[in-house]
Image 1 (cartoon, rainbow, N blue to C red):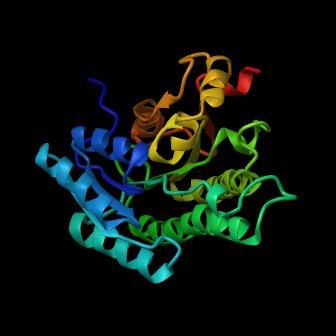
Image 2: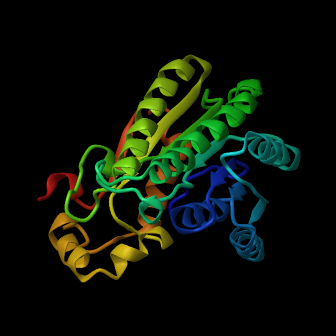
Length: 266
């Protein structure tokens, strides 16, 4: 079994289902201590309980990620419990479709604002608080002080106009890439790495619309030819853990596509 993270690593994860949950499970299996934050207390509690029952180390804080005081409190709780934060994986986000996201001429202000706040402002707030902690930490034996991985999407740079014309969502994911590259440049001299993972269509609770749409499923046979369907969330989690662990210690400012061929297929 592949070891992604060193035992004793402290991983801070936003989100408690889908890719976030699979990453937390795999990290705990490696011997990492995992701290989960998410808006939904029940999801956090269930994931934490599952990891602890399996012999892992985990804690959580139900957090509204767009509220700076709640994010600050969650980071403080993690450090009080585990003493440090080695790695941050920003996963939590939404599709704003049901709130009015869509093509620009149809997109509502509510859809735009909610999508940008949930996907970008939340990431800014979490990165800000975690970086304050990382900047206080000593470098590890590999010369790294901390690692951040932010979740984008192939829709930021490889649009699909027929089924995924959610322009606020695409804009939010493009902003995440720009922010992450700027952060990577600034924090490299502080020995803090910042990378991005950009999945295509993954089987998660957020993709239920696609999972039940026969036309989209048919499209994925050629759009994601490596699997001919939706990508399994654990495949994304394994790629994420590579970027979060010290096997990728010399990688920063990069965007890793986990897309089953989306970007090179029609």
